Image (tube, rainbow, N blue to C red):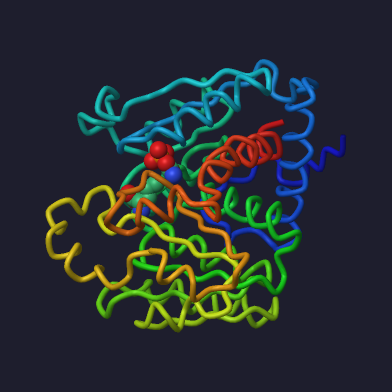
Length: 313
Ligand code: CP
Ligand code: NVA
């Protein structure tokens, strides 16, 4: 098994901190780890290593896949609910970072502000992994790239249509796709489009990779000739007070059979989950033959093991 370790000691705060070659190396390593795990030949690459997992928001996939991933790599993961830590009583991030660096080999954090993750990383002398912020969800985007690669056999030239909120998921996908030569069209209602600085960064990536980045308010325009249709919740964690306004604004952006029929016949349907059936995606499409959402969820495990092994081993 090839162990590229030139990412050792790095943080994983955004896919944009990595070159296309580094992201591809992570994906290739994830494929190797996935095959060896399925063949019952898992290597204990992180024997004796510990990962602290700080959560300020709810999680099913991220918590379980990181915890199981560390176990499969021979290491150990600690679940740290931020509300139960001194962090929840006002202890400073910079102090938490330096204390945890004395005990752990890595930190995964899910929180609200990207700048809090950046501060944690700046003060920690161990790798910090972004497990979702209001701005970004880079580990999910890596699992999504792996899933697209498995189902389409390539990344360069694939077209992804993202429907709905210009949120953390849209942002990380924009950065990841544009790095790897995937064309991406985002259809969102006016006022809910991705952040301008993220779009600018994606456009810069796209110039180098040959990809295209398109923003539209027309779902039909985005899905035309798409290989991948992707959606995410209309109300992300922390936005609950806006739910009723959002449900109204996003109604025309539901990923349903009518929209799916306007994409390529062999298009796949993706969703980072959790899903809200009848809101951003119809039951029929989520459960339909083109949906790969559970294979996508599984890939969180494999791709994060690759990230962990490269950063911590
Ligand atoms: N997709 C994702 O990050 O799921 P969780 O919120 O369950 O971790
Ligand atoms: N955009 C969603 C993703 C959940 C995995 C949220 O932030 O709640």
